[in-house]
Length: 121
Image (cartoon, rainbow, N blue to C red; front, top):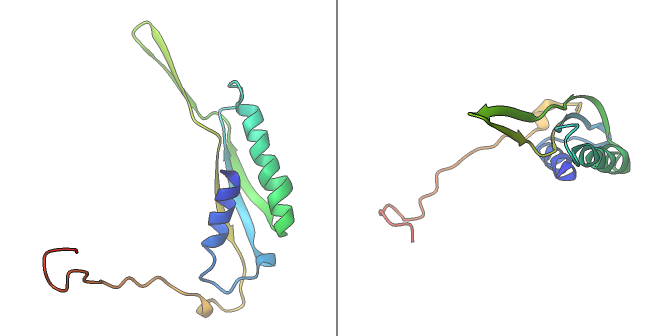
């Protein structure tokens, strides 16, 4: 899922004339560290993204943060409850460009599939 987050962040820049070499990432790493298997899952995600994928693409991660207590614990009567969030990565991509006027903006257009009628088929 970490690789997918990077891919989506880069894809979001496709409407701008950005060179991949100028792209930088901000990464928010989230995990419930200390829970069984979660430290290893976080390490696997960091390795896949920061040590393999990004260097292969020539992209750096100069900024970011971590949230390493992604769990909630409470009691319902005498019963202890706990929920552990899965390892997650939120990525934002940014880049400098020479002229912002070269970017595309989304334009939504209404289409009428029923040709003025009430049906859609």
